Image 1 (cartoon, rainbow, N blue to C red):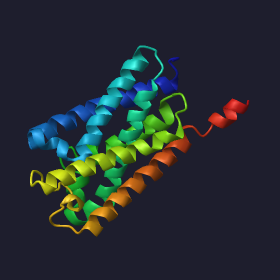
Image 2 (tube, rainbow, N blue to C red):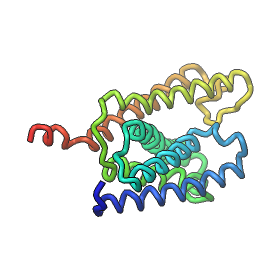
Image 3 (tube, rainbow, N blue to C red):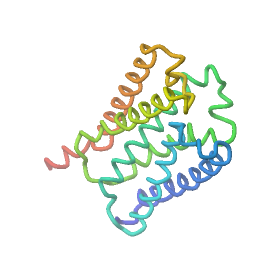
Length: 207
């Protein structure tokens, strides 16, 4: 990969992401301990930490970013966007903007991380075009997370951590509705990101 302005921007963005995600991870470990992975937000941010580390490794070695990293980045970028949207339009109106976007590492987890992740994926990372099937992975992983949490809630091992996962307190309709909303949100976001990232590939192939 030539050391162009895009290459330097890619390195800078992912280096910043890596540092910020490490700071957030250390904070979350201190606050939540071993229970930190119960949060979808934390899971998405930790995955982004891993993705940014991989992007930096491949780029600094002058190697092409492999398909598996792109697939992981689709999952993390969509997951982080979902956390932003849910925090902004569902959780913050009730719990307060300060808690979800200002205090401690909330700006990293809910705003800065999602923004930088999407910018890196869509506009900076030069990768081979992936099959359209890639757009289902964010929804699949989100549903797997939800099912695991539901089982743990049913066994009284976990409470929540989100209201629509509290199987003993919510109706099947509410749970099913939110599962459907989040799955559809993941699919739509992934499809939009797919179209933006590889919008010029068809024209390039015809040239």
